[in-house]
Each structure stands twice: as C-alpha cells, then as structure tokens.
Image (tube, rainbow, N blue to C red; front, side, top):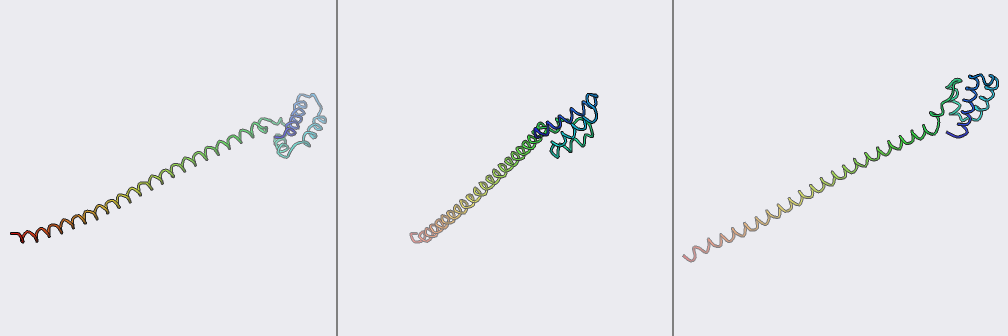
Length: 141
C-alpha cells in the first residue's frame, strides 16, 4: 500500500475516533474524512466505504499482508518447481535404466547368436573330421 493511502486512512481513522470521543464536531470530522477520501486510491476508498464509518484496520491493508501473500506465492512456486524437478529426475533416471537394460539385452542376444554360430561352425568341422576319419578307417584295415 502506498504511503499516501496509509496517511489518508490514518487521518480518516483519527476523525472517526475523535468524533466518537466527542473531541471534534460532526462537521469537522466530515471535512477531515472528505480530505482523506480525496487523497486515497480506489482500493483504499473501497476499504473505507466497506467499513461504513468504522475505523479501517491498516494491518489487513498494509504491506505486511501483501508481503505475506507474496511470500506464500513464492513458496508455492518453489515447492511446485521442486516437485517438478524431482519428477523430472525420476523419469530421466528411469529412462536411463530402461535404456541400459535394453542395451544389455541386445548385447546378450548378439553374443548368444555369435556363440551359436561358432558352435555350428565347430560342430560342422568336427562332423567333417569324423567323416574323414570314418573314410580313412576302412582304408588301412
């Protein structure tokens, strides 16, 4: 809240208090209230009109209230960003783990296929050697 509004509301509140305690007459209080009202922003005028001749509490209109709301919004934003960061890190880690697992499975399939191919080659070589030995066995008997 602007200092100009705070000063105007204080003048208004003083006029209300002085009128209630009969320190000033109604015309003087009305003139002070008009002067104060002329120097207020629209938000402060609305607050004064809602009080309907009562004292306006500066605690609810002042900077303390606005700072508290601003701090709450900042805290909410920070918490939201923190949660977003944690979710992002969790998803990123999960994607990395799944990608690594898939790569290991692919490597295992490639290694298995190579091992089977080597086995088939050796098995064919042994079968060829056995055939050769069987053919030569009859020649020397």
